[in-house]
Length: 93
Image 1: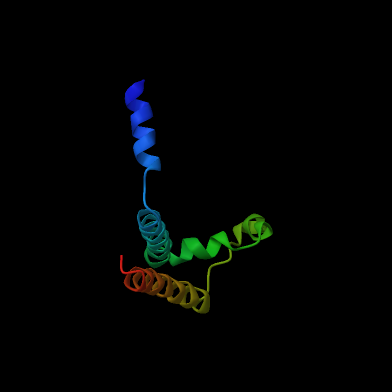
Image 2 (image 1 turned 120 degrees about the horizontal axis):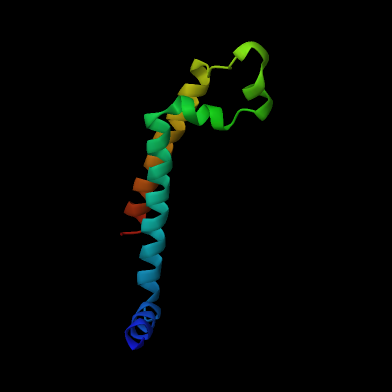
């Protein structure tokens, strides 16, 4: 039990700079995960933002994402990757 307490004490004994870098790395990682999802399968991401009523159209008339939607999703992905890189560069992490 004392080893768990020592571990918790060690975790709380961080400097503000360590906390700052942890936040920067976490945010950059989250932006990268979001971007990779958009790069790998932009059509799936487009379906996330469709109204639920479009999923239950009669005669299986699924609405396919158009080229403009796919372009915007891919552009968003590259923007997120750029933000993650800029965040790491500016934070000197």
